[in-house]
Amino acid sequence: MKTLTSVAVFAIASVLSFNAMAESKVNKSIILNKSLNKGNAAIAIGKDNAANVGSVSVKDSRVNKSIILNKSLNKGNAAIAIGKGNSANVGSVELKGSKVNKSIILNKSLNKGNAAIAIGKNNVANIGSVSIRDSKVNKSIVLNKSMNKGNAAIAIGKGNSANVGSVIFE
Image (tube, rainbow, N blue to C red; front, side, top):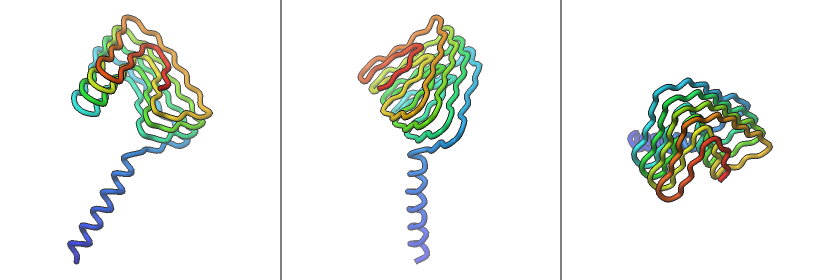
């Protein structure tokens, strides 16, 4: 009986922890990312992928009455994602499958000599951009200031999207 009870408790705890990881909640908060990057590389090879340099990525989350601020000074960087879900960002803010309500999203990006490459299936490659995909944005402010020099954003292979200094709603 003790073993059965232990297994049942473990199973319930596992389910509860999985649900907690599936969606994050950010309420009345400030998310601040300030990064000075020089000569960096972020590479993700494999299945669901994501490679970020000086970026903020929010996935499957609820953001309410909050501020997301990303200030990124990038020089000679590369973010490469090869393989299935893909996504590669340099100095960007990416929201995917999220609900944003009464919030401010600010991205300020000074990029020089960067490359963001996504090869493989659902793809996305951003440099100095705000990318909002499969998300709901309500009563919010989205601001992107991007000063780019010598950049490339390349997306090869199925869903595609490559952006430099852009605000994208998909």
